[in-house]
Amino acid sequence: MRVIHGGLYREVTFGSTRLVLTERPYRSPDAVLFEENTHLAMSGSFRAGDYPAPAGGGLPRSQPPVMGGSVLVRPGRPTEMFLVVNDGGSQPAVRRGWLERAWLEVFREAERLKLSFLVAPLIGGMGGAPLEEVLSSVVGVMSLGSHRFPRTIEIACGSLAEQAYAALAHYAHPVRH
Image (tube, rainbow, N blue to C red; front, top):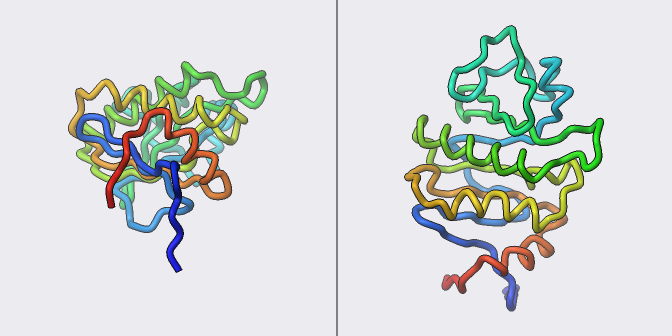
């Protein structure tokens, strides 16, 4: 049996970057992205372990960032990037400007580190941002088109996959397999 998703789009391409929506990732990435809460970022209490170095090597390890839209990077295999876009103490918890700034930083870091394949959840989803806003933030940065890396971003949508495919249709052109 083969499932055919009529009218639903799973990927878009802008410039040299392809955005792919999946239920779960299938390949090993160069970098894994995580959504991070501003409170945890300011306190240094990250879910995934010790305090990572900030993007661009800006702040020293002992001084956590205080700004929404920051990206913290932990080198390794795979590299881990923490996008600080969720402020649990305010409404709305996720701000569109933070999402866009964070994705722009992700693209800068991917270019600097030559990271070709990134995997992420729906960044902004933890803070309750609308699905369309979450996708438009990454597509907006992709459409700038002035980057060579990353080549592929795979967003694992889990149970929201069908809704994400429908939301992506606004940006998509038919993809032939």
